[in-house]
Length: 460
Image (cartoon, rainbow, N blue to C red):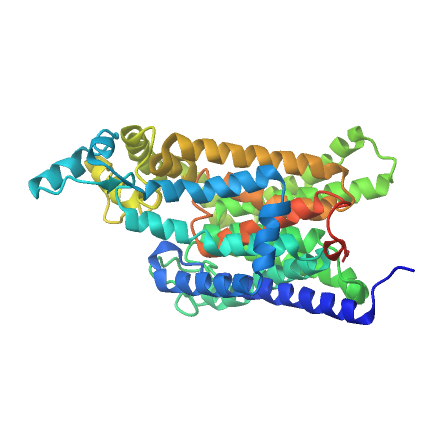
């Protein structure tokens, strides 16, 4: 006779609750304190400390990830941590003096007779801060790896609730022309929804991820009847929030979850015998939805029309001039880079006088270009490897029973990758944590997990 007694079941339930509370704590802290980016070091420290505390209670989850996760995921996670670590390892003067782009450092240090050992990074403190930013996403990744699927579903709906909180915070921000409720006032934009972020593009791409979760996650059994009307209502509110950010990229990227919903609906109507060709046919309604939204935007007055005006005025975008100077910086530090987190320092040297304004660029507004400056070829290769891995995981998920849930996580990762062409979504703690959680969703629900331990096989 086999089976588990009441005591074993109680212990498992207690362990699951602890994992749930740890995940909730990290997500809540990340969105409450982590949306301001590198300028808010004290707030970021709070997120990292809470993540460390949560991880200290789940050391087994940390080691379980490194023992049982797919080799490709472990390898890329380890290399992502190793890259900034290597950049702050002291090197003899004969080595770092030969690195490209170090001429000004050499001259400055020779003036004070201090040309001795130094790091690859031109500012090791900033690189150390960049390394510390990995703490919170690593915590949610490892805790989420051990958590049961039902717990992950609950955490996903908690992220949706955070999206609605951002809308609630954003309404007074919009109605007061950013005079009330703005948490990060250094970048005032009247009539724009920021929520808990300093950058409206970050708000927008997070809401795209929350929209994907709201549309595609399973509704817990006890809320099935409520979910019939609550799910479309929540999706509508999140779409409204995305529009209120007036973020061009977020509005376009909202087409990804809308397209997935349309595809899921069509395939469900066609039945289980639907062929691969039918899957392509299902894209047609997604295109129609996107076209309808576009027509609405063109013909509607008010805030939507203002967003359209911003699309039409993109030719004068100052980012074009930033990219020009940033490309020069990338060439100057090629192939090893200047060190993670050092863009703002090195860019000031290479910014051309004709492109200079009263405001500092702060970021390259193209994360791939910024990584090329800070990490050179190793950083670009690492990004390429991550993109290949994510594409492979998403493709493999097509055969999984819970593929739509897996693709809800993949939606945010794709949206972040696309937005990184014109912005820097993963440069704050909130979206780093959310990205790690989305990765867990993609991996865990993208396979049927027949070989995982029994504690992770429970379904929502």
